[in-house]
Amino acid sequence: MLKDRADRGYRVVRAKQKLWIFLFLALLSIFFSPVNSWSDIYSFVDENGTVHFTNVPADQRYRMFLQEKKSFYLRDPVQYEPLITEVCEKYHMDSALIKAIIKAESDFDPYATSWKGAQGLMQLMPETAYVFNVDDVYHPRDNLEGGVRYMKYLLERFNNDLSLALAAYNAGENAVLKYNLSIPPYAETQQYVNKVLRYFRAYRLHQ
Image (cartoon, rainbow, N blue to C red; front, side):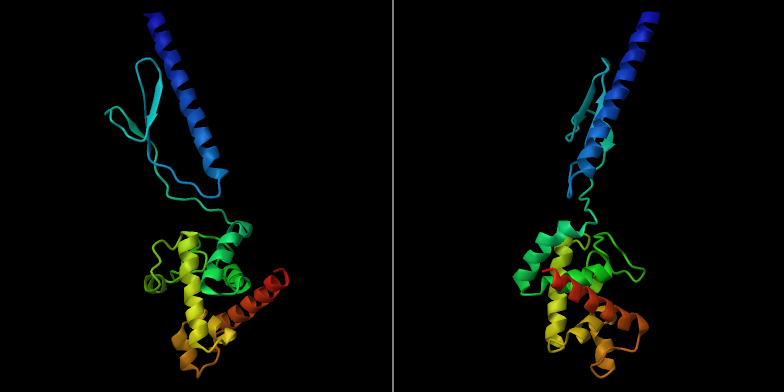
């Protein structure tokens, strides 16, 4: 009986060790990859102490071990350089300008959410995301596609006046129209326009 208990105890310890090893390897794969996705992982320990893993739990003994997470994106400007260039070329926009807007809006944090409800790299409001068919505001490509198209629209709307387009991006186009096609007298908006223009000049120098 003591031997049986010792064997069971040994199998439990071994099972726990295997679980921790698997979890450690899973976490390494998550955090050392810029973009990751995985399915739900289920596990159970059989009577011999063997740990089983699957993403298709056909046995009722399986229990959730690691739940699916769609993506994990890093807050790294360099990571988004190729994507920004690609999307800007697609819509004939200046990548230095888009990087300047992202820097001012989210500082390249794809999960940024403002207290007003703006979301993602380019801080799209839900209604803007809807108009420009953005499926996932926290997905860098989706967010960039929507934000670049929105900025292109604003530039066309205000006859390529960059300052007015930026003011509209921050305060809304109706605010620019309300003040007779000028930057609204809001401290936040005026500071925003100056900040983006400053970043824009800096990014252009390094293009």
